[in-house]
Image (cartoon, rainbow, N blue to C red; front, side, top):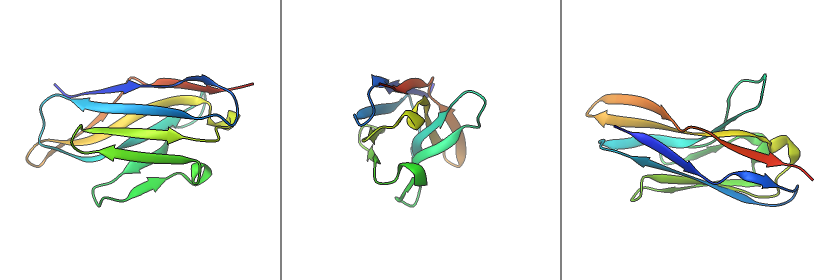
Length: 120
């Protein structure tokens, strides 16, 4: 069974940094996309940063220049490195992965979510 295990998150002050880590565990063929979404109450879940199958990283405009995504293909993991955090970044952050479970059998997986709160 495939699982996405998240680590990181918490309470920080504006201007500080946090790192979120997500690791895919289980048996599968490959990962075709992996990254992070976030959601606040009453709003749709939005994509923050994503490594796609073409090897390029897509970053949400509002976090460009502050957030980075780093992928470790050996460990099947991604890190979301968040710098100069703002109160507007407060949300539950979810890890997402599109996994090729078996050849040509693609499935979407989500982590359990981790709270990030930016407040003074």
